[in-house]
Image (tube, rainbow, N blue to C red; front, side, top):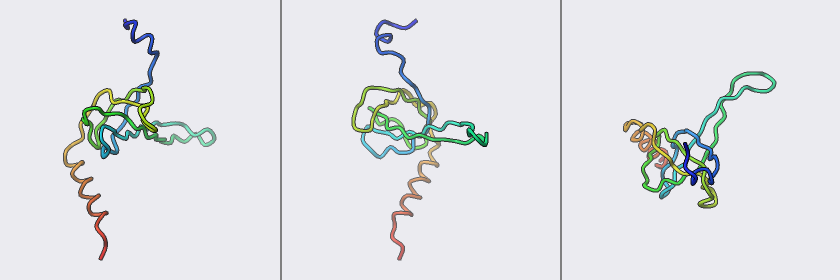
Length: 109
């Protein structure tokens, strides 16, 4: 049973997705994918949405699977907040991403 405080807030949307960026302070970017059937061709296609979410403790890292919840507007883009980190990304994946970014940033001589 829900408490009276939760009933006043109404039903808030929750989404599960992967963190694709954690470079901002107390903010993460979460990519949520959904599979839909094309209206005409009926092929199943993957659609994705990006959400900016508030991460108070800077807990989530790139590659983590997280649950986010809708909240009041916190900034120009942030309308979601981090509820929990469902699954941590493996460390080598995060290190590999950093290595790739460094290689791309280097100028070609």
